[in-house]
Structure formats: C-alpha cells, structure tokens
Length: 566
Picture 1 (cartoon, rainbow, N blue to C red):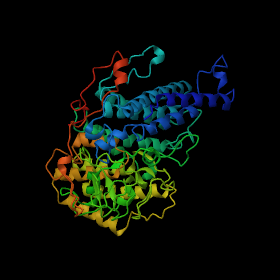
Picture 2: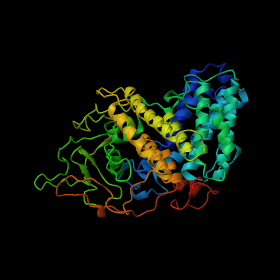
Picture 3: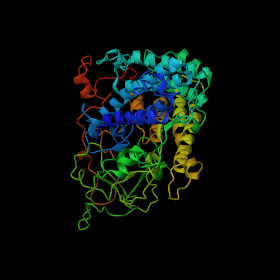
Picture 4: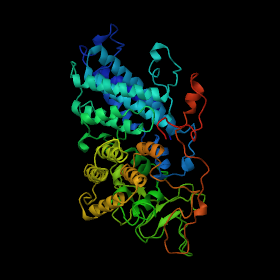
C-alpha cells in the first residue's frame, strides 16, 4: 500500500496554486505586501480540502478500516491484521496518523483566519471538525499530541502526548464553542457548496454537534468523566438528527479522473489486482441465522445487499476445486449459496490459494459494488458496480442505536424495544437509500417495508423482549454492528467498551462455525488459531515514536486501554 502523506501535501500545494490563479486580487492577493507570496488562502478554498481528508480517515484501501474491519469480524484478511497482528509500522495506521495531523494543521489555519476575519460560521465548523478528529485520535490511540499538534510555526517540532481524558475535555469544550459560533450567524462570508458535508446549513451542523456529543457521552458513560446532568441537559435540548438527510457522511462519486473518487472499499476490492477483502464467515453465519447464541433461525434480508458471490449456488469452486475427488479445497465455502471466503486465524491448507474467480466480494451497500442476484458473476467484468456508496461517519440510524443503548442501561427515559425497532427500520431504509443513489444498472428490489424485512425485525424484537438485560445490550450492539458493515470504526469502539457483539474466537469452544455442506470435506475448527490478544488500542506509528523526542515508549496494544474501556 502507498503512503499518502506526500500525496496529501501535494494536493494542498495544488490547491494553493489554483487559488493563486482563480481568486481576484481584491479578495486574495492584496492580503500581503508581497503579492507573489500570499500568506492566506480564502476560507472557501481551505474547507473542501479539509473535508476530503476528514472523509478518508478511518476508511478502507490505505487507511485503518483495513485493520478494524478484521478486528470486528466484518471482513477477513491474509495480511498481518489477521489474528489481531497489526504492527507499529503498519502503513494504514501511519497513513491515518499522518492524515489526522496534516488536516489538524489545515483546520488550525481555518480557525485562525476565521477568528481574525470574524467569520464565525467557518470558525465553528473548523472547531467541530477539530473536536471530531480529537475524539477519533483518542479512540484509536489513547494519549496523542493535541494541544501542541499544530504549533510548528511556533517552533514546536516535538509535540507532547496529551492525556487522553484531557483531550476529551478539550473536545467537549470545542463542541460547545462551535455551537456558539455557528449559531451566531456572524461573518462576511459563509460556507455553501464548499461545505461538502452540509452545504453550509448551520442547522444541520448544530444537529451534528449535538449528536456527536450524545455519542461521546454514551462512550464515556462508564468512566469517571461521565456527568449525568450533562447528558440530561443535552437530551432536554432535543436537537439531534431527525432523518438520514442529516447523516454526517462523505459522498463518493463514480469519477475516476483526475483522481479516483469511488468508495475506498470498492477500489480495494474490485479494482486492485490482489484479493484480500474476504467477508467474515462469523458475520455470514450470524446474518444467515446459524449462530446458536443470537438471532438463531432468523436470516437477515440484507444479505444480497451486503455481499455478492462470484459462485452461483451449487457451483463448484473454479480456482482450486478438485472435480475428481470432489474436494473443494476451500477454507470456507457454502455450496448452497456460493459464499466463498477464508476464516479468521486460519492455518488450514486452503487459506492461501488464489481465489480470484471464487471469492465473495463486499456488495452494493458497503461500497457500491454488486447486488447479489444469485446468478454469480466475474470480478473482471467492469460493470460489477459503480463504487458510489458513502463513507458513513455518523448516521441517523446510529443515533437511534445510541438512544436504544442509553435507554436500555437506564440513562435515558423511553422504551428500549421500541427504539431498537426504530433503529432497525432506519438501518434498512439506509440500505435502500444507498442503492438508489448508487447509479447501479442492476435491478435491485426495495428492502424496507417488505414482508421479509418486517418478519426479521419482529423476530429480533421478540428475542429482545424475552432477553435479560445483558442479552438485550448484546442484541442492540449486534444490530448496530450489522448496520455499520463497511465502516468499522465505531464498532471497534463499541466492542471495547461493551464487549459486544460477541466475536469469533478460534481458541474458544468448538465448533466455532456451523456450516455443513453435507459432503465429505467438513470444516475443521482445529485449523484455526489465535496467537495474539485483542488490541485494545492501535500501536502508535513507529515513525512518530522514533522521530518525536517527546513521544512515550511504544505501548503493548493488548494491555493499553482507552479511558472509557471498562
């Protein structure tokens, strides 16, 4: 994988060059006495570049979703993230770290200029984005540079690593300041089309800030930082997301030139030559209704929207199947559907076969890939998807799951069962919305409101209503995990702080998987193992540890907890 740091700087240099030739002297060049070397860039030129980078953080392809999607068992990989093995020099970790600090510098420029010019809406947006990034950095790494992270001009080249709880306190303060500044409506220039998230809508930015605060209060609810009165005041304000129109997401397009704007998971799954994004068989069996401990016998109607099988039902594996003996030589293959993948922690003889023509790929919902029509397909076909699917960062359905959790644990009033139903309905509606906006040429049936969807939701609610408190929390978190497929950052956080959803454990009781093709080649659970503990945070990138004189010694990520992890 490539390192994006140089490309990011180059993009910013190009942005500056465009600014030089497109902005009038009155608006831009006259800000400095040396007209050949301007010192500021117009706010509406800074903001889009910031938001593009924010949209990349935690994504797939060259970013940490490559690790996290495996750690939360939505996908499986042959790379080092298998068995929770990502190391300090992992390029995706380094890329996200670099992106966070490059864009924080750009955001600080926006904040400084907007403060000087009195353009408080831009200022508030900058503060909201800085707060969001601060929370993400803590959620991934714990203690990180923050207070000194953007002071290179002041001579700070080795920023200190701030205490993670202190960063969260700063995040909440920034969000409050952002609300005040955005609500003021003050300024001489205002964001519009340069705001790639909300088109300059101040009301939607306020909803985002409030919803983000609710998410963060929920994350810290078991820590000493949590203050129930703060949560109550926010809930009483009652100004959160009201529909998917408020979703905080980065919209991808089908453009491939001059840069590829398609969904990053699509690019890494359908475009790159190497196949290394396998749908988790643990995820598969839960959605199929095979797991004996949750949603048993209740298959999820979202399956054909979530992944696409190259093999048609009953079709024998083409790449390595032995037609003479009938041995599919498959690490995991469901003959009844064509689903083909590898297992987490596999040490079996079939793990490392080339399966270009057999492997199942992420589908239309997570990445704008193919809808599974049951006919099989060839990955080499250029019409297998558009790559148009958003990078979902904080959504309306996630907000509803957060409410359901807070109600279930007694921190909000309401009916947890009814809120869970509402969240599930919104999750199914989101699938239809993504499909409708994908530009697919396939005929894809509507999902929400169908008999299959209604039956599935009714069955989950019946399971929830009959469960004890712990099981109810597991059901909420499991459905939130299923809805988040393709965007694993919050699922990684949810698992660490709640222990749910339950993840596959190769060293646990056998059998781990329930698949039985009824042939002479059953799955052998002894061919999976787990050599590493679960990483409770990610390594600090080795470059930072080696080059920053104020950096701490490298952590043991299996022992280093985030402060809200209980």
